[in-house]
Figure 1 (spheres, rainbow, N blue to C red):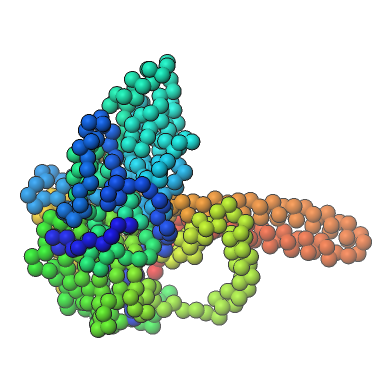
Figure 2: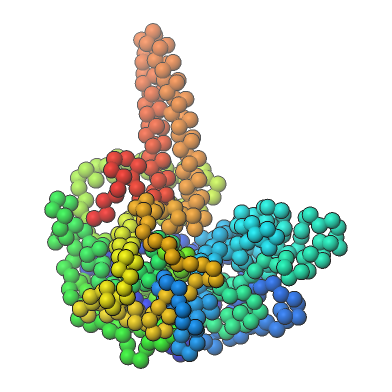
Length: 588
C-alpha cells in the first residue's frame, strides 16, 4: 500500500460500520468482517501504484505520466436510478472515480477473475510481471466473455473461444487463425483487436478500477487518490472483509448512516416471547447528538458527528467521513483517546447489487465486536466437550492433508467458524431489501416516503440530501445499462451466501472444494466399513466373536456421521437456507 496522504481539501464522511451488537462496548459491523487480506501480491507499478491500462498507439501512450496523488479527491456517489444530471460544477461524475473491486488476497492470480462495476462486466488477471490488469469482459473478436478464458504460459489473458491472447495493456499479441506471421502482426496492430482496458491500482490491499478507458482517463486517474488515502490517521491495519449485497447502493449506504439500527435489528430476542431481551442486551439510549458538520457537504463527500446510542457507548464520540463514491471512514474516541476505527467501502456492481468492504481496528480492549451476551446452556457445554476430539481431528486433516492448508484455513474462518457474521448480514439484507422494494412501489422521493423525526435520523437525511444535491439523485450506470428491473428478490437470493461472498473469495472456494473431497473420502470409508462389518458379522457370528464386526460397523457409523457434518459445512458456504427441517433460518 502507498504512504498516507494529508487530508483532502474536501471534507469526507463515513458513517459507522454496519453495527452489529448491543454489547457494553461499541458495536461494529454486521456483514462479513472475517475475510483475510494477507500479504499483498507483488506487482510492478508506475508511480503511486497506477498502471497504464488502455490499448492505444505508442505515440499516445507516451503522453501518459504519473501525477502526484495529492492533486485531488474523487467525487460523491448516489442511488440506484439512472442519473440525468450532467456532471460539472459541484456534481459528481460517476465514471471519473476509483472504485474498490476486490481485496487483492481474494483474487486468484492463476486464472481470470470476473468483475462487475456500474453494470459493466470486466475481467482482472495478474500479468507476468506481477501487476494486475482489467479489461472489458468481451473479446474484440466475437465478444465472447474473456472471463471464460485462461492465462497462458506467459500469463497472457487468452480467449477460450478462438485463442486470441492479450498482453497486460489489452493489446492483442496472438491471433491463432492468422494465415501467417505478417497477417498476425497486421491484425494485432489494429486498434480493433484491442480489449478495452481500464486504469488500475493496487493500493491498501485492494484492487481499484477507474471505469473510463483511454489515455486521458489514465492521466486524470493518476491525479486522483483512492478513497482510503489521505486520512489524517492513515490506513487501517487488519484484514478486509467483502460481500456483494443483494440490494442496491442507496439502501446499503443508508444502513451505514444509521448506526442506531443495531439496537433492534441486531439485538437478541427472547426465544419464547419474541420481545427484545433485557438480559442479553445493553439498554439502548436515545441519540441526542447527530449532525452534518457545517460547510462539510460538497461534491467530494461530507462529514457527520454523533454520540452513542446505548448505555455502553454513551461516552463515545464518533466522526464519520464519507469520501465519494465509496469510502465511509469512522473514528470513535472516548476520554482515553482513540477507541475504534472502521472503514467501509462500496461499489455498485449491477442495478440492485453492491459490493461492500469492511475493516476494523480496535485501539482499546473494550472496543470489541459482537452481538450480545448469548446464553450458554449445560447441553452446549457437554456437546462441546464431546465434539472437541472430532473437531481437533478435523482441524488436523484440513491443516495438513489438503493441497493448500493456508487458503483452506482462511476459508474455514469465513464460512464455518465465522458463520455468525452471515446471520448479521442476513438481518441487514432483510431490512434493506424491504426498504428498497417499498421505495420502488411508492414511486415517491425519500422526503415524502420517510418520516425522520429524531436526531438518530440525521445521518440518513444527510446522505439523501447529499445525493440529491451533488450526485444527481442516483447511480449513473454504464452506457446501455438500464435500472428498470424489479428490486423484488426471492428469499433464496436474499439468503444466498455463494454469490454474496464465496464466489469472490479464493480462500472460501478452496475450502469448499476440500470439504467436498473430504466428504467423498468419508463416504468411501463408510461404504467399505459397512460392507466389511456385515461380512465380519456373518463370519464372526459363526465363530462366536462379534467384536470385530461391531467395531467395524461403529467405524462405518462414525464415517457416515462425519460425512453428513462435512456436507453441512459445505452448505454454510452456499446459503443460509437450512438443509434440514424448516428451510427458513431464524434470524432473531
